[in-house]
Structures are given as C-alpha cells and as structure tokens.
View 1 (cartoon, rainbow, N blue to C red):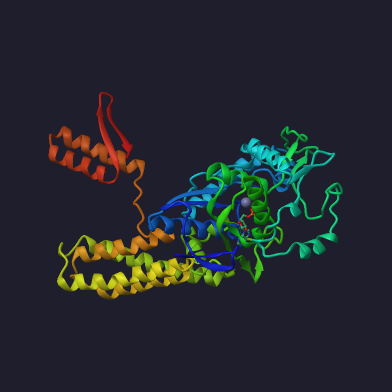
View 2: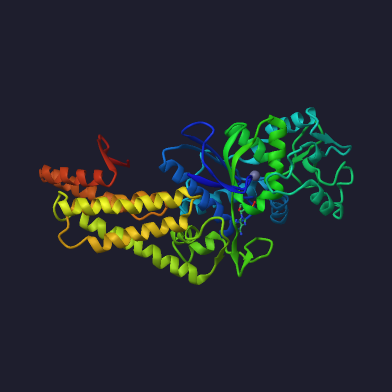
Length: 468
Ligand code: AMP
Ligand code: ZN
C-alpha cells in the first residue's frame, strides 16, 4: 500500500510503527458555526482512509480534535452574549449530527482543546526548559523557530525565504518577540475572553500547541499518519512538528497526508470568502450519501469544484448502485439455494473487481478509480443476474458489492426502521392470538419481532419490549 507523503513529496510504502496497528491524527474543525462542505472533505476522505485500513486488517486508533478556544468562537459568543463554552458545545453537537448524516464514524477519541490545558502548560514548560521557547514581559510565550534546525521540512520552505517574507509584516502586540518567525505558544488574557492560570500569566494557548499535546496524550510521541486539509501544511503542521519534535526528541509523524481544496467557481470554499454551503444546507436538498459519493469521485489530492451539475450526476450514479443492491436483495430470497457451476465460474470472474478496487485504494487511496471498480461490479451484476439465477448467486454478489461500498462508507442496504406503533400493534395481535389459544400464531409474531430486533419480555405488569 502506498501513501503520498507531503514530507518527502513521494508516494511511499506504508509501514506502520507497530505491526498491525495504525495511530492516526486528523485536525478537526474550529467549532463556531455549522461546518461547510469544504470542512466535510477531510472528514469524508480520512474516514474512508480509516475504513480501508481496517478493511486491510489494521487496528486503527483515530483521533480528531475539536478546536474549542479561538478568536472566532469568542467573537461569536460575545455577539450572542453567551459563553464560548456554550457556542462550542452547540456546534460540536451540530457537527456530530452532520458527521452521522455523512456516515463519518466517530473517532476513537474526540479531544477538545479546553480540556487539555494542563497538558499544554506542561509541554510549553518543557520547551522553555529545553531552550526552545521563551516568555516575554507581558507573559506571552513564543517558540524560537531558529532553534529547530528542521523548521520548514514539511512545507519545503527555507528559513531565509520565510525570513524575508516576515520582515515586512509587523504584528501589533508582538513587538517583544525575539525573531519575526517565532510563533505564540501562550498569550495573556484580554477583556471578555476565557482564560486559565499558568506559570506565565492568566491567558490561553496559541492554536498549534493543542494538536501536539492531544496527539501525544492519545496516540503517543510517534504517530503513523497525521492529516488535514492542505491549508494546514503551513504554518499549523510545520509548527506542530517543531513543538513535538523539540519536546519529545523524536520524529513526530511518519506520513503526512493533505487533501486538496473543495472549490466553488474555482476558488477555495471558505467562511471568510462567504462562498460556502453548509452541510446542513446540502442535507435539505440531497441525502448526504450523495455528498459523500461526490467527494469520493475525485482523488483527494486533486482540487474538486462543487457544482449543482456534479451533485446531480453523483445522485444518479449513486442511485444506480442502490438499484443494483436492491435487485440483488430481491433475488437473494428466490431461486435455487445452491450455486450452479456457471455461477461459480462467474463469481471467480467477479473477484477481479475487488482486486481492481484494492489496487486503486492501495495506490494512495485513489477513490475515483475505486468507485469505477464498484461500477464495473454493478454492470457485471446487472448483466449476469437473470431471472432464474440462484438466490445464492445474488447473495454472493451482494456480499461482494457491500464489502466495497462499506469501505467507501456508502450505505446500500438500509435497515428497515420499525416504528413504535407498529411494534405495539404486533404485540396486541400476539396477545389476541394467545387469548384465542392460537399459540403457533403468537410464537410466529414473537419470531417476526425478533427478526426486526425487538425482544419481548412477559412480565407481571404485561408485555414489555426493547430494541436489541
Ligand atoms: P477549520 O475549521 O478552518 O480549521 O477547518 C477544518 C478542516 O477543514 C481543516 O482540515 C481544513 O484544512 C479543512 N478545510 C477547510 N476549508 C476547506 C476547503 N475548502 N476544502 C478542503 N478542506 C477544507
Ligand atoms: Zn492540528
């Protein structure tokens, strides 16, 4: 399996630090508003990477943070006259709803910056002790970029170029820093802002330190994959490397993966440009599975331009997969139970689509080609599943199809929802059957409910039920 590593600018063989296990960290959103579909791109992409790693047999520890202390959150809180905590909690919950709609699985851990302040203070103290950071008079702590010889290795920038770029920019309030390149680890509180006590001043952390601390706490000093959108390469990820490697004395992440932008009219979709669609807005027009399909139809390192036409064609394409799955499901329960010799041969042939799918995913998660392999399987199933084919044949094809769509996080087999009233109704019918001493019918209804995941309990107060 090969992964394109931003650090080396090459596709490399994937070899995890510990055999069979993958430690993966993905920078998550700043929670001050509903997420937009640009933010959804890394969520869907790296969720798919995680699913494929698991499909290949790896045990994946997947950590993704919520940045819940930030200027934008504070601004929003002040506008609404509520606390920053209320804003971030609200939008974390909303973000989780969107994730569920897009079938993005919850991370193993979703740490929040405000709950990791002590860890950040400890790491900053250690950086000061080792000579990589310094506090100035007002209590601000800066990281000394020039002390870290490898600075720039991820973004492939050299210090001299950076230096000349920065000389021109003077940030007010930062006159005390020793070098224009130095970045903030801790800053003093301002009126109306949340703050925490620290050895330097009451204040709050800079942005970059949270990820170094959370990655270390939940995954360890050395991790396998660190990921996020390409706008994070510089300065965020570059600064994370500087903090982690200077503090721990070890290489931080082995593979750095970055998704390209989701654009609209060929410009990056972003809150600040105002050219965005929220995931919630899209959910009002489409099943979010369509959005997921749209994201996977391009390679993650290629820019993707959002358009109504592309969403429509994604909807139609997804529909073809769903119809094929539906057809296989219908046929599964009819016809012969045994495979014919011809069908056995066809199934061997169908294995080539799984192989093509894996080849595509092994090549730096080429989901565009992987989706094409799924369509080849759909075409094959449609043309080889005739009236009179065995149920076993349809069942095997459906299994092959769902194995692949599961990796992509596309749901083709919807679990049938059963409503409370339907359950109550069936229970009433069962009671009536029992009263009429028709125990066979009563048992049959209990069996039907069980198949739908409903367990009945006969108690003194009557029949109780619960979802299994
Ligand atoms: P933010 O909330 O801005 O920190 O962004 C959260 C994640 O979304 C980061 O990984 C960003 O790189 C990513 N992101 C933001 N905008 C876009 C976009 N238009 N296309 C792709 N990724 C994006
Ligand atoms: Zn981060």
